[in-house]
Image 1 (cartoon, helix red, strand yellow):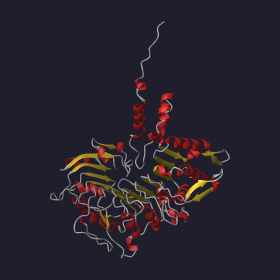
Image 2 (cartoon, one colour; image 1 turned 45 degrees about the vertical axis):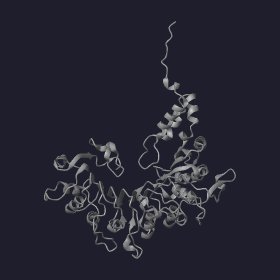
Image 3 (cartoon, one colour; image 1 turned 90 degrees about the horizontal axis):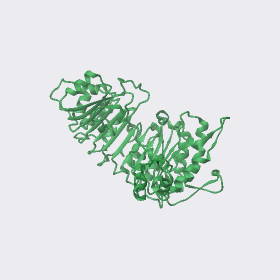
Image 4 (cartoon, one colour; image 1 turned 135 degrees about the vertical axis):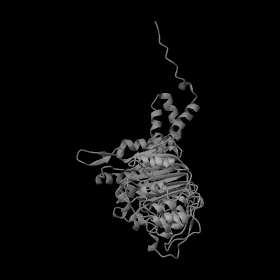
Length: 508
């Protein structure tokens, strides 16, 4: 009788140590998504690997770091009934507990997704009720937290609940119900924490947060639990010595308390403050103190946020914020009031990347739209001089080492753009999105003596084919890239760009 001999699967002959290393690389050695601490593969792949066969399952369960990523979607925790009522689904809670148990002593990356596309108020209230249960499981392991992200499209319910839990004592459950959560002091904070993010995804409601946020969170000490201190004191706190990145997007805070929390670390390298209504922004002194508490800052994002306009505040405490290590500065504005004054207070002589964008949602986003005039801001960036009464004028341009510049929906005259771009002699990469006058300034041939930067690549959108041909004919201009005007944004996906040197633009 003929017997077919199946080929041997050589991967099954690999030693456990090598197979474990392959599993770890496959799970964690992949790029994270933009703005997140981990990639989706690191969440799903361990379960896939453990489902192949009994040997792989045994190996996967023996590697704690394989189970160090928690992605908690509150939609999976809530069950909707035919009579439009909601209840909790116990199975996902058990799965969360199993993953936490499998991770043993490994550092944890945590994402809590509380988004509800339908904006159903009952679902939001149910999500809020879920939060104490979720944080009961998580806060017991907060000494192992490496990253924490909480994302929602409403402030009124889930984000308020999360902020309240993070700004109070550590919850310890007594009894069988989460309604019996009691708050007691706990001297242990989150000493491994590297990345902290709270995000409200809807820009409009983020900018009008005072309509949706109860006043409790604005009076409490933000993130007191993470430093192991109670709300009224910071004695015997755990310094956040590993905290490198903080993103606060659309969530107003008690900024004085936030500064006290940051003061326990001083190691932050990336800070984002985005989408805060004018009445809920920090004062200039508070903003200045927050920046000065981050002397190692390398990336700063201020998008529809930042300090209250400086003209509305007294001048006697005004001063320069020194950021010698800052490499990237992203500025998104709704109004240009005092922008040049704010820029003049940022001393960043080693800045390499500058992104300027009009994020006003009230302005129609047509390809050739016009918006708020930014001539004063562009003039300051090019010369270091401002006529604003609160500005700190300089004798030279503030960003002499700038190499990457991106302008999105920025409105100014052709002459102003010409003077602005000619000031950056070291500029290598230029991105012009919905900024037609800047493109016209590049193509202007009126003054042949005007110095032009030696551009390695330029991304233009929208652009006509004749304009592309003219750009390619200019001296000192390398690759010319184009893209879909609807697809390009501050989080620009590389796939929407055509050109052979698109990798340089991945950071946009």
